Amino acid sequence: VTLEPCNHTGRTGPCAQALLDAGVRRVVYGQPDPNPLASGGAAMLAASGLSVEGLVLADGAEQLNDIWTRAMQLQRPFVTWKVASTVDGRVAAPDGSSRWITSLAARAEVHELRAKVDAVVVGTGTVWTDDPELTARDHDGVPHARQPLRVVIGKRDLPSHSRVLDESFETVHLRTHDLDAALKALFERDVHHVLLEGGPTLAAAVLAAGLVDQAIGYIAPALFGGGTSMVAPLPVRSVDEAVRFEFDDVRLVGGDLRWSASPGSLVTDGLRE
Ligand SMILES: NC(=O)c1ccc[n+]([C@@H]2O[C@H](COP(=O)([O-])OP(=O)(O)OC[C@H]3O[C@@H](n4cnc5c(N)ncnc54)[C@H](OP(=O)(O)O)[C@@H]3O)[C@@H](O)[C@H]2O)c1
Image 1 (cartoon, rainbow, N blue to C red):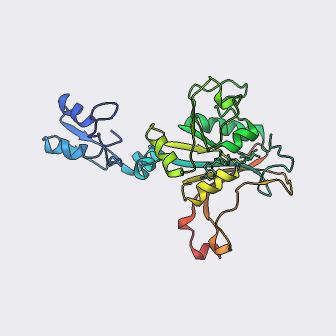
Image 2 (tube, rainbow, N blue to C red):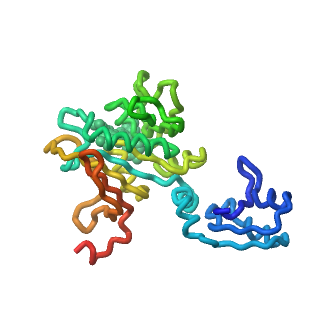
Image 3 (cartoon, rainbow, N blue to C red):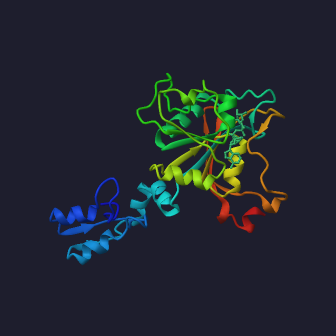
């Protein structure tokens, strides 16, 4: 197995006990269970007299499960922040219009990503301004088989006619600004991967709290000059205080540029120079 058999009763019983009950004599696994609640299966099986060999191709096994692994280590959902902007970092024009900044191809990729994550998160501001559906749909507008939980964070009521409140798929409205509590509530619902698609206010709050684990941006070859900046002001006063990322991929999608990055703790002073 790729993952150490668990030693924990969740929605199902402990896998280690099931292996014992089934009379299995030898267990070979790749990745040790990173979930402190569920680990210990290998030791339990070894203590019960089975032959147990762990860490076989462990790196590869972990890569198969990388987002889940990070979520278990963090004990909160892994957060991917996605933003679509102009070259000058604007997410809406001076008149508030924002549809569509990026190409059909870029938007189709985002819909595919939505179908892979467990939840899509926005702030109340985005619901009031854009009235998004927050579903994963194909080119013809047909919903994908797998849909993320739709999550809105913020204290304001939502307009009663909001599309996120339609009956099609589930929506959760978390009336808080406490981001740790919000992520904890989602984790308790088995949400392991969150796609943050909110506007600049929520993005800045999540960035400032150090809760962005991955950033994905689509940059359209366009300039607004004015309008809404992709992040609201951060607690940054000088170059030294910048929130830094490290790019890990850049490519063209349709006519747009897609970048992805990880938090920049690995960016050294040497690289900055
Ligand atoms: N291009 C893109 O990728 C993209 C994506 C989304 C939105 N947008 C654009 O962004 C604009 C909307 O911006 P926005 O900033 O109002 O949207 P937002 O960031 O989605 O929502 C802002 C709201 O989030 C709530 N919130 C929850 N936790 C918070 C916290 N810890 N700190 C502060 N606020 C928190 C607050 O709601 P309460 O006041 O209710 O408490 C706040 O007013 C629109 O023009 C939209 O078109 C662009």
